[in-house]
Length: 410
Image 1: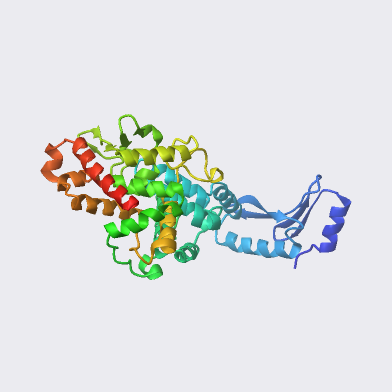
Image 2: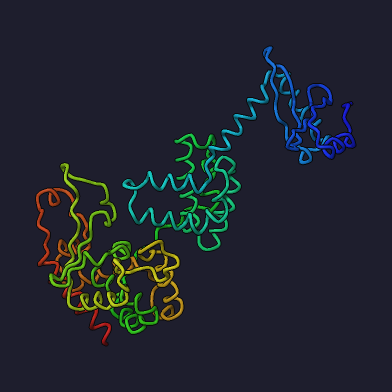
């Protein structure tokens, strides 16, 4: 039994007289001149006198102090320096990274390695699913069950989104393990198939028929004028959604009637080079209807640098563009609400396959049609044929625009 009592301790504190009273077996109650009351454990290890501050009174009661001191004495008997252990724990806590800090470091280190569209998607999933739940938590404290719960929550929206969220979790914790920020990767034990089932069979790209386009075009304004113009441009230029979402006005030349897509904005081209030179961007000839649609978008851009600026300034950090996921959601709602009974389900990327199919139907040469989509010609053609077919592509896209306008006006 210890020698101290709660009555004694309370009297000393009331008297405000500095004291150091032993309770036995190295446990000591101390009261400083400033009134700070604390528990100290004094002990010897390897022949040296040591002491550890267990905690302050009354936050640590007499009974708790005795229990904690007993636990520390057990460690000391095992050769553990409990004071050094506490200091090491303090240092680790001070240098601990939160999940948000780890993720931000991963994103920063991935710039130049991953495409802009990929990073934008990862940022969105971190912001919407991961940060609200574990963003402020010490990354070392995360367990697989924490990550599983986030993925299951995302699966309520869609299994595709859930897979993407799990992919981000795996990426940031693998990064943390590589940097020795965490000693254990909680995501490595999560199997996608066990959590979400087998990956679905890849969806066949949709080609909207002329009859379907004639149904869709008159209804496009119901998506909102900005989305409607975006859909028309996707169809008439056959670009990827990410290329249009990231487009800047500085690359749209109304006088020369062209739109330049920098290499960093082209899927699969960022960071790649041939013979030590940067990969070329892609120059798209603009037809009369497309020029008009770009002009209409410029009036809606409220002086933004981007063709499709984010609608809500409150969500933006400075001037930025819309996210592809926003436009995907708008297409999904449009299909469900207005055309589901008369048209195949389609996504923004299906407009690209639709454009490619109609180029062939309009009699455009295979090589020219592939270059309209900025597809590599491959093999010896790609090596020896450096001609960009700009004039030929302009003729092909004029045919496509005329066809689309006829669908809109019919």
